[in-house]
Image 1 (spheres, protein in one colour):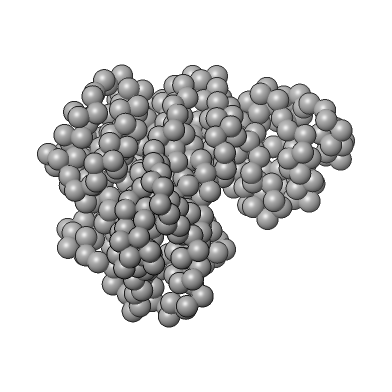
Image 2 (image 1 turned 180 degrees about the horizontal axis):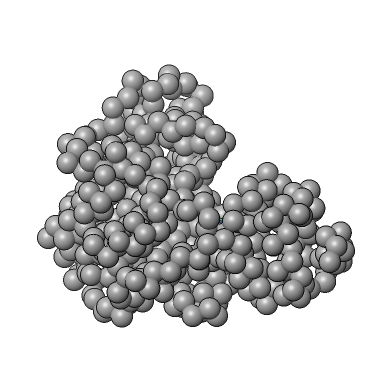
Length: 428
Ligand code: URA
């Protein structure tokens, strides 16, 4: 094949054969296909799309571009979980130990944050000493011994995606369903778990801005998983406002630790328990939501979190530190300017302010300040009186009046109460 012919074919609305996709992905992985031609092809795909069959072939070609993990040495059904990204998303840090507390092994590889979205790995690294790099052998033996491991993606996992995702990031070709679906599912398939829960976020702070697109992405990924024998379920979750109350890194660990100790709000506990119910169901373990919540109250889920920290050398005995208020040079409290109901806390805008406070990365090379971030005191649907605390901003840099104004622009108070459910739909 010649790359220029493939670009032209897609540009003119053609469909690729499996052999063409295999050639293209292997050529791109070895460097024979240069970035500029791949960029042109990504843009052609952006405009012309891909069929279900092309997407499936692309996904499997991507899987084959790197190392495939074999978790068969771990007894039982291994379940994995993935979020398409969001603001304040600390779900994995609570859900993984919660599921593991029912003796279902969780072997998960997580990613880092970029832009307004946070990453589980960065959050875990705010636990002093926590190590996210493991060899395959150590990863497997940790899951065998402790029932849980959350580590960074191995460099060998889906090599084509490392290159392609970085290229898409700088060529405005990230937000296209077949490319997102193949990127995520190739990593999940190569990671080796038997069953997968996909948290597809929807709204202002997510890749998918509306429910129709989210449904299509979820359906595409669920079908891809099933086609290769991995039981896959997707939940569409609300990302119009941040998830939970903490946005940052160490403060999200604090919220996770508190939730694992029975101190979460009832809506948040319920949300996590419903996700856990689906994951457990994928592993053939049927539990009711109250039974699952029980493990947040009786210390079992927290014990799994501590076991994971210990196995990964994180100092969870620094509990006093982990649950203390953020320790920074500058804090600013945001108070309600009128009475009414909170009707909006825009996830994207709040996430960007958190990033500017030091909690995130504008570019991949930026470093994160684990103590920076935002703690919300109120969420959408809550009533406030004039002067009530809505949020506190934390930073080690001076917090400018422009940044405070920017935060306030994302908050709306009005007379009409609105409800913001966390789970919008389940797609099987
Ligand atoms: N997350 C991924 O891993 N890949 C994408 O393409 C988008 C989100």
